[in-house]
Structure formats: C-alpha cells, structure tokens
Amino acid sequence: MNALASTLATDPFHSRFGCPLPRTMCDAITWRHMSWANFTERFSPTTGPLRLGSWTACRAPGGRTEFDATFGIGDTIITCAARAYGPIEALTSMLYDAGFRIEILSFHQQSIDSETATFVLAERDGRREWSMGMDADATLSSIKAVVAGANLLHR
Image (tube, rainbow, N blue to C red; front, side, top):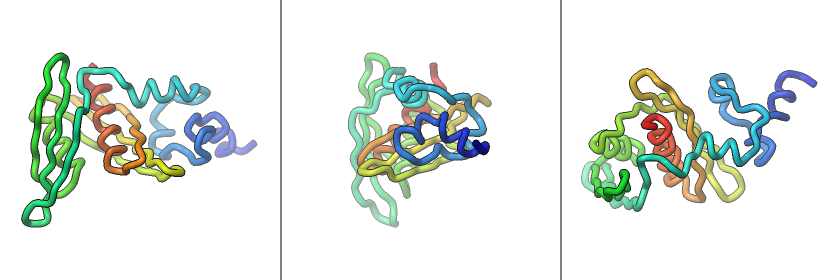
C-alpha cells in the first residue's frame, strides 16, 4: 500500500464521504484511526462558550451585505450586525467585537452529496486549531466552522 492509500484508509472523513481532508490539515494534526464521532467531537464541538442563534443577510449599498446575527455567550444572548463584502469578514468582525478574537489562516470547502464541509485553520495568540462545519448551505457550513474554531481557541 502506498503512502496516499495508507493515509486515506485511516482518514475518518475519507472513510465516510470518499474524499480526503485538506492536505494542510492532514499534515498538521493527529487524527488517524479516529472514529467519526470522535472526529466530529474534536473538530466540530457542539459545546463551548459561543453558540450561534441566527444569521441573516440582505444587500447593502456599494456591493456590501448587511449581516445580522444572534449569539449565546454563556448565559447571555447578544445581537450583532456588520456590513461587509462577505459572511466570513462579517462573522470575524462580530466575533472580535464580542471578545472572540481569532484570525482565519486557511479555509477549505468541499461539496459532499447534498452538504458542504468547511475546514478552517484559526489562530488566537499564537495557538492554532483546525475546525469543521457541515451544512446543506455553504455559507452556514463556513459559519459553523468558524464558530467551532472560536470555541476551540477560547476553551
């Protein structure tokens, strides 16, 4: 078995969906032989200090979009708004204003059947974490991945 075949055989994402994880993610993390449940628990945590409540978008002047969101932070619900060119720009601005300062270093998306998987490498104070989000909507998939990254980096 060659090195690529060996890697794919132990990749829980490839085992489940038939396509590999982003190469830079494979090079940076130890995930081989994880079950799918452990993989999603590690890279898409459903618990943490930050929870996404709602997300809406509407066109604004100048090619921008007005984004509105609600987040749960601990026991508090906050509403946020940002005018930006894209959802990730808006989301990172909202998170920054809420005290979740992260930088997106790498962003990958893959279409899988009726869903989109998004993988994000985020950094905070020199610490880096990979995260994943999945959703039928590509934008919500990316938002889930960034929120997961913020939760991993603010534990």
